[in-house]
Every structure is written in structure tokens, then in C-alpha cells.
Image (tube, helix red, strand yellow):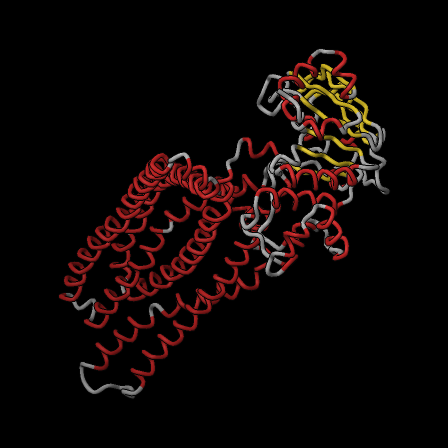
Length: 581
């Protein structure tokens, strides 16, 4: 039988806990050794205690029985406590590895792995691995030792009857092998549906407002109900498969017991066994059923754990972002060059960007405009290395960004997106996010520059106020200003603004725009915006259409060309003019 590579890997991860496992192993040996003690005492009592005057002190009997169960209790507690200690450590280690990896994977990872699937692996599937280890290690070792000790005791009592009992073991092995493949297949399907359910719950929680306003209650209920019913179906099918193992095992055991009783009666007639010997044998044989049952039932958690291990190690082994490249020793000047740049998303044949050639001088502001789907966000997302270029390259201060370590490259960049992401922490922690030694004065200065003073003044704990899940306790405009304060605090030489003022009202926009103007001075700024006020301030405007730069120049130059930008301006931007019709 081939040992699963996942089991080998898990065994390797148990290396640091060998001493603890040795303690648990000793506890299991002690538990196994106590098993035949009770039937041995019963044999002594029946043969020597009830047939005439006992040849031993009566007080030894209760002391022996209590002593057996005290010893058994200590050994069982030691095993359970130690195994829980080891398994909880392993659980924490696996989750840490998984969490570290989801922080390191590229953005494209989530194109093929849903958030629900990732959460399901971290919370549910990894727990099944731990249950497998605890159950398998305990059952296979402790129960196997118990079976060996009891069998040795049975052979010593009556080897002929023991041979009859041994017929039971290969039959149980056949049952386990038969159910194993079915359980593993059902477990894979169960975990896939469970991941889908997690995704539905995550989406329904995140999109609560959309569900309410668009009346999606029934639709979401139906989505959830379909998956809940599927889970129930798989649960019942697995339960029926595993539950059948126990009665089949017990029926086999009852057949063996029945045959043993008949043979024992025959031996009794021939004075080949005593009452005490027979009762002791039957007691030990019945005690053998529990560990055999546990060994038979270990197949369920084993198959579930192996299936879960495939998903967990699949996530841990997911390809991370590159770690190569040099560290920039000084602050970058901010010169950017896009050279023959082309890009297509993983799994897509069509090019999202093609033949992009553009030079951005240090401190220059470039605005990218165009219809949706033109490639604006894709282009700016290549600058921090969220995706590698498919063709051509991007250079920072004449150095290809592929030669720069990603952590070093991203230290040179601050970004504010239209999709604001905040953390369930304080305002101060969100402003100084990523800084291991936050500067209180800089936090206050960034908050002031982003016009958050009035917001902070009205909060109960000021900068230390918790803002809730993704800033749920703040308004849309306040959340946007907090994201801008975070970019101001970072003080990076390159600034990316992707619809940074999209959630602001006119008054807030004017205030924040003034802060952005100050922030943008001396910084290379890439702006994606649909508002004329932002675009007019740009040194140059690049017009993208179908992944190509079709026009490049200042606002006035492009208007005078009366081509793509001028048409876009009249359609989209002119209405912002005070006297626009």
C-alpha cells in the first residue's frame, strides 16, 4: 500500500514535537497494558475466589480494580492532553503558512480561486487534517497496541479460541478498503460545495445593501438553499457509508463470539477450560471489539483528512509573487518608461494592452482617459508589479522593474483607488498602515492635509476611534479622504490615483483636491479620472482605446486636435463646465 505524500509531509511537520508525541506514545502503551488486567482479575476471582476460601486478601480485589482504572485514567489523560497540544500547534502552523501564502500570491490567483474557497480551506479543511491526525494517530497506535496486548492475552488463555477470533481481522480490513474510495470521493464533492456555501455567505454579507435595495432576498435564499441541500445530501451519503461499517463489524464479531462460545462449551465438557478462564476470555474478547471498531472507523476521518490535505497543501504550495530583484538604496526620482509594453491577463488570449510607449518625467502628472475597458486601470496596475508584463517592460529610473525587488519597488509607490479598502482598526492605524513605527505628528499632518480634522473632532476617541468593517462607520466621502490621508502619510515619490475623488461631494472634492495638488508636487503622478478638474491639472493626457495610446498631449493641445480626446471631452467632460448646456 502506497503512503500518501500528504501524510509524509504532515509527518515531517510533526518533527519538532517528537518528545511530546513520545509522551503520548508512552501513555498509549500504558492504556493498552491495562486492558487485559481486568479480565485477568476476573479469572482469578472466579477460579480462586468463589470456588472455596480465597487464597488472597479480599482487600486486594478493590485495590487492584481501582488501581487499574486510576492507571488507565492517568495514561488516557496524558495521551489526550498531549495530542491536543500537538494538534493545536500544528493547526496554528498550517494556518500561519496558509495566511502567509495568501498574502504572497499574485492578484491573478484570485481569478481562479474564490475568496470563499480560500476561507473554507483555512477554517474548515485544515481542521479536518487535525482531526485526521488526532484520530488516526490515537486509533492506529493506541488501539493497535490494545489489540496486540489483548490478542497476546487471549493466546495465553486459549490459543484455539483465539485463532477463531482472528478470522475477524481480515474481514474488517475488506470492509474498510471497500468504503475508503467512496468516502474520499464524497468528501471531495462535499468540500467543493462547502466552499461554494462559504462564498455565498461571504458575498451576501458584503453585498447586504445591494440585496436589500434590489430585492435579492429570495435569489440569495435560493442560492443558499441549493448548496445547503447538497451539503445535507453528501452528509447523509457519507454517514450511511461510514455508519454501515460499525454494524457490519459488530455482526462479524457476534459470529466470532457465537462460535467461540460453542467451542468453549465443548472444551469445558472435556475439562480443557475453567469457568474463570472462559469468562476471562469472553471479557477480553468483548474488550477487543471497541479498539477494532475504532480502527475500522478511522477510515472516515482518514479519507476526509487526505482530501482536505490536498486543498490545504495546494494553497500553501500556490506560486507566490517573485522574490528576486535588488533593493533600491535611495528614494527613487520617479522617472517611468513604458517600452513596447503589452499585457494579457492569465488565461486570456486577447491583449488588454498593446504597444504602449510612454516616458514620464520625475514629478510629471499624467492623466489616463478613455472609455471603460480601454486599459487604464490595467496599465497603472502594472507599475507596482501586480502583474508581470507579457511583452516589453517598464523602467523606474532606467532600471527594469523586473530587476527590482517587489517590496522595494512598492515602497516607492502610494495608491488611492476608487474601491477604497480600509481595515477594522483605528483611524490612526489606517493612516499609518504598513509603518511599523508610526509617527503621531505625521499622522496628524496627513489627516489635516486630507481635511479629516472635522471628522476626527466629531468622533468619541478621535484618531483612536475604531471605524468598523471597511470603514462602515464612516461616510463614503470620509472613507475616501481617509484613503487619501494614508497615501499622504506614505510620502512616496510615485502616486497612483485611480478615481481618487469619485466618492466625494463637490465641497469635499475641492478641499481634497487642494490637498492632492500639494501632494502631487514633486511626485510622479499617474491619474485615472473622469472629472475635468483633475484632468486639466495634468501635465499631459494619454488617451487609451482598446489597449493602445491613441493620443498624447496637454488638455489644450488635444482639444485643438479635435480628435478622440476632443470628442470624449464634449461627450463626457463639458457638462462639468458651469455654463455647459
